[in-house]
Image (cartoon, rainbow, N blue to C red; front, side, top):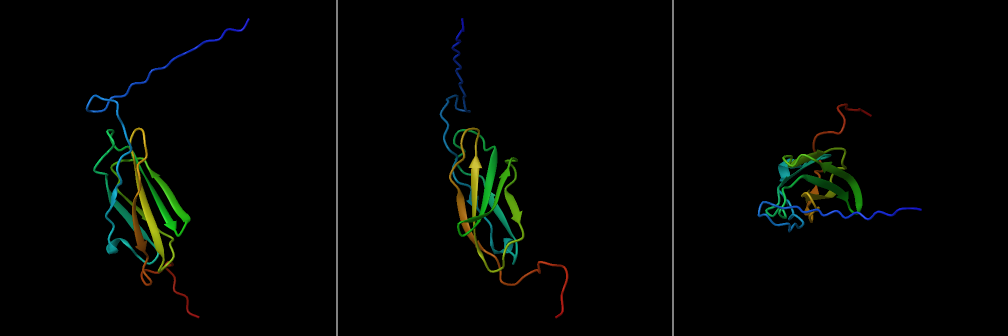
Length: 131
């Protein structure tokens, strides 16, 4: 005779206000400037969201898009890290940078910024070829 067991688990989480209401964090503000953009690289910089959703920010996810093509998708597990440098990009090209904040429960909406690499700048190679 087979026995069937029924188990119930109750999980209760409390935030600093001693209630269990959590929501998605707000969007990080992308603060990158023209100085953070080169011909073949860019540095995405951001500040944490003003609203953490009731739980501390635990991580970020950074997505770099060229049109609808995803170039990079990087998880940053140190919540103190608020920048990411990306190389190997095309010159004079528009890239969309999206930064998502995560708390203990949810990933929030993205902070988003269009960044265009420069036409001229540091060469991709350290070598100069004469033709």
